[in-house]
Length: 64
Image (spheres, one colour):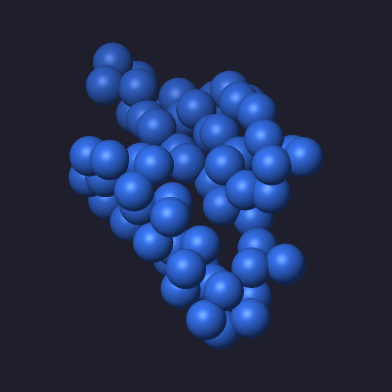
């Protein structure tokens, strides 16, 4: 299951809602939630931050 959300203004609230949806479908234990942010100057430069699960949380900078 992939869920793509654009123009998120409140990441903490959005994460809570996404985790609630994943819990209802019993998918939360297998889920990886990643926040991707594109650089305005270079759209190919993407920052990826793992938000869930917490033990894998962190920021990763990717450029393709």
